[in-house]
Amino acid sequence: MSSVLRDTPFSVLDRSRTREMPGGGADPGPRGRREARGPQPGGPQALRDTVAFAREIEALGYHRFWVSEHHSVPGVAGSAPTVLAAAVAAVTSRIRVGTGGVMLPNHRPLVVAEQFGVLESLHPGRIDMGLGRSVGFTGGIRKALGAGKEEAAEFGKRLTELLGWFTGAQDAYPQVHAWPAEGLRPQPFLLAVGSGAELAAAHGLPLVIGGRGEDAVLRAVDRYRETFRPSAWCAEPYVVLSGTVAVAATGEEARRLLVPEAWSTAYSRTRGVFPALAPAEAIAARTMSGPERERFEAAMEGHVHGTPEDVAKALESLLTRSAADEYLVTTSTYDRAALLESYRLLAEVLGGAPGTVVG
Image (cartoon, rainbow, N blue to C red; front, side, top):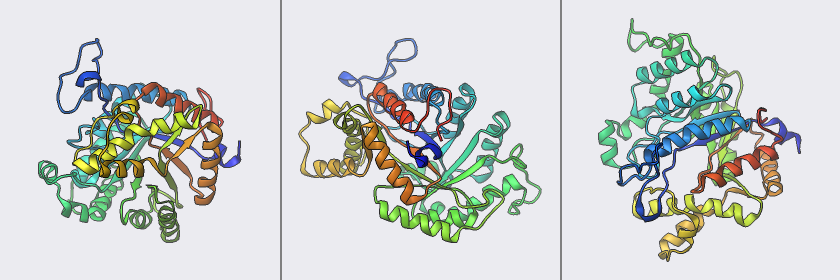
């Protein structure tokens, strides 16, 4: 194993993806009953699966476990990331826990600070505050959240206020304090979208960045490092690359792991709704329209996947070119057992074993 793989921490983002059941039903509940049928099959079960999955990921030795924020998305159950992060932190003991991320335009900075202050108080030294600038996917969602595109345009101002609630430096609201957040230091990260890399550099925050356009990602990383300003939060640039990594005994099996998420992406871009994950076999049996097939094939490209040997070579090359400090794995697929096996094989590639810290 190369030193770059051995020395790079690897972490996991789980989006609490929902899954179709045969006949259109939902996942069984904790006592074997069926969850209520509806447009989002298995949402409650998906959240319970995320909490259980976090314990498995901790046992495999990964560095962090993050959850996400999505609203009115049938295929994603994770809508309240700080609540879900609390549940994950409560059943784990070593792994860092956080959000990838809280979408700051949707929330008042004071409330976000208070929530992370509570998390950091209950689980000191283990909480990550990943932040993003996305707003709701549709006008109806944005209206329901009370957060339009103008809030996204003020992201930098909101970020400054949020960080100030922890340091006590915010001056927009004199004599107001974010207890118990003030004086605490959950680790903030900024998810790069658009100008996110420059904003992370200006605020002196770690950068989380991904995408299938590798050259564009590497250029953004270079700009981040060149313009980074040290802060009380981060003394020097820290880059977290994010992306899908699928590992299996054969290249064909690894590629099959990519199919459910690729089809969900193609479906969303042709129909405007991001659906629950479907089995790879069911997707292979579909007759796709021309636009669906084009989107599906595009969504299958640009991921790290293959046998353990293939994945080791690809990751070593990517990490060497980018000089990234960490890698956040964001893989989703229909088969939960195959997903866990992929993470287990990846941990072996990285030199990890149950009970040890990868990287």
